[in-house]
Length: 342
Image (cartoon, rainbow, N blue to C red):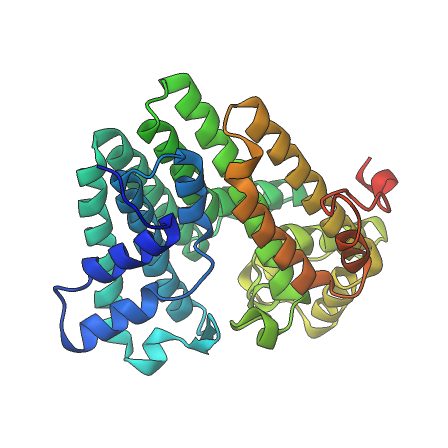
């Protein structure tokens, strides 16, 4: 069955309809949680399907509900105060009912996915498992002995918490378009890489952005010892200068004030910030090329690309980003850190 309205409008209607059976505070909370946001994951799937298939809307809604449920939990774990420019749900409605709402959203998402079909259900369920395992990994950290190991651990967390759901979006699109297993795997792999890039841009917002513009609580990652790419680049820079950071103290969020100040200064150095901007732009270019080569097409990733560019503007406003936005291709790397990358 096809639908006759714009895919994004159909998605918003679907999300409202899915919560219609609820009442009272649960109805208000679930709609509060699923309202707003850029719908980047859902639009990636909807744009890739091409045809206006109602199953695609159900699949996109399931992905958005999973995402909303994890945000409810993340804001509790991080003691956040803002999300999407509003007070976080657990402060507005209470922690207990927020946890209950996240459970409901997760279960209803799986119910929706089952209606789309077994292949998509399996893909979404695997992504959900990866997300929980990655979150649990943060509560049970392994001993860190090198920056290479720290990078591997940080990347595993990113792949589970963020990238897996992007992979599901493109895998779901491939399933709905009737593509074979090889194409499904290729599209899923592209989605995972796009998800990693998306998370790295989000990590930069936490370090370089402003809360008023981002619409959420920032400044958590550095103090909490999150093993993000910009933080590890800064740690590597300090190591090269003969001022290594204690990785165990970093991971536990217990760096000495003097070390935390050094790490903060390194993160905000022109060197590290330029490397991050250049890395994100070059990855965006690579993703667009793979989208074309895999048959997905650049048009399908336009919404995602616009979101990444917006995130870069939030991070590096007024610097090389603003200059590049006026160029013919704003995704062209600055080139300022080519030698550093090598």
